[in-house]
Structures are given as C-alpha cells and as structure tokens.
Length: 305
Image 1 (cartoon, rainbow, N blue to C red):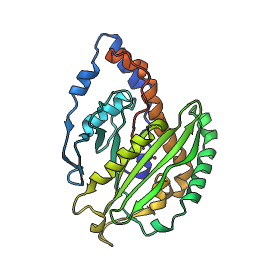
Image 2: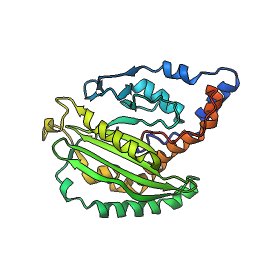
Image 3: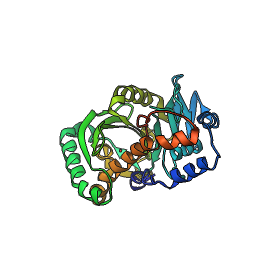
C-alpha cells in the first residue's frame, strides 16, 4: 500500500454503514456480540502474513484475525467495507467489540527499500516542532471540513530505532477539540527488502501504559521472512524508497514533499475519526447487540499515523 493510499486508509468513516446496521437492528435482525465473536476465526501461534511475506510469532497472550475478519471488525467499528489489511492482533483476553478493547492493525507499504543511514542523525525534537506547525496549519481546513481541530501535544514515547533488527517504534499524543481525554497513536515500522510493515494502534491516554507494553510485545514477535528481510535487499534490482527514517516518523509524508501539508493533517484527522466512531457508536451497539454498557474506551484503529 502506497504512502498516499495508507494515508487515506481510514478516510471512509461515514454514517452510512452505521445507519444501515442500525436499520437492520430496528427491523428485528439482531446479532448478539457473542455470536459476532463466535463467527470470527481467531488464530494463535505462528501466523504467516501476505503469502509468505512475514510471520507473526504469537505468544499465548495474543491472538490474530486474518484480513477478512479484520475487515468485518473494522466495518463494525465504523469504517466502510473494503478495508485491506494483513490482519489484526488482539490481546487474547479481549473481544473485538468489548468495551476498552484495543488492537494492532497490520499493513504493508511496498514503496521500496528504506535507507536507514540517517537514523542516528535525526533531530527528533526539530522534527516534532515541524510536525506541530504543520498540524496547526491544517486546522483551518479541518474547520471548513467540519472536522475537529487537532493539536500535536508531543511524543508520548520518542522514536527509537534498532539498527540490528531494523525496527522503529514511537508514539504521539494528540488533543482534539471537544475531547476531554488526549489520544495516543502508537506506531511500529519493520523495514524490509522492498517495503515496510506498518503496525498501528490507537487509544486514549489512560491506555498509555497498556499500549506501551502491548506494542513492545508486538515489536518482538513480528518479522519478515527470508527473502523479504532488510538484509535481502538487492541494490540495482530492488527499488529504493524515496524517503528515509525521518519520513516514516512524520507519517511517510516527506516521501513526496508536495503531499506533506495535505496528508499530515489527513492522517491525524482520519485516525481520530476512527476514535470518534468507536466511541460514538456505543448507543448503536446497544441496539444492534442488545447490550447495556457505557461508552467504550476508544479502541485501536488502523491508521493509520
């Protein structure tokens, strides 16, 4: 998935699918949360992703949903059908529609081999300041579009890159107008021979410790398979990406400078829309699944960062 397509991945959060499901619930065709859960094909242990691209070595504390079931869950969370991923990783003790649930959405950007030679030279403080300015500059357009304005508060966890495993992890803290609690975007990138695995989780600030521990676990059990690993890159044969580590942290947006101002705000806005959808459809879930519960804690979407 290209940088642009990945940025637009969560753009399809509109009321249409929610209204359709609500109408289904009103017509008497109800599905219980238990039946929805039972219909999901949960997998454990080692799971191969994308026709041999990578493997997820799941410990007992985690389980996996394949692309088809991941699409169903993302649709239930408020996305339009047709979301393409490599699957989702959940804590083993949580259900897909449970209050306070979170998950990591797995995608693959086949934009080329990312040169990591700049990793040790990046001034993440300056990069953060630039990202803050870009976010603020996008707020005028966000108001016109009827989307809540955003403030990039800072790093919830500063970027950290491991040159031996070629894995990168960081988290941003975001504040959205009208929201009492800040949002945390956790991002993991695993660099490969011809692209990057994107693993994204989103939650509320109260979930920070949980997300930090969970994404730390995920960082350790996802790896490219032989032939797709970073060391398998063939200069002159495999395509090189147009961006480096700094662009990955900025959301991949520096890959094409002309898109930077447009997409940085879009990425943050779209991920936030998932958060709003997850919280805002609590009343709808009560109708659809016949459950009485409080508004759920914002759950992890895709991403997108």
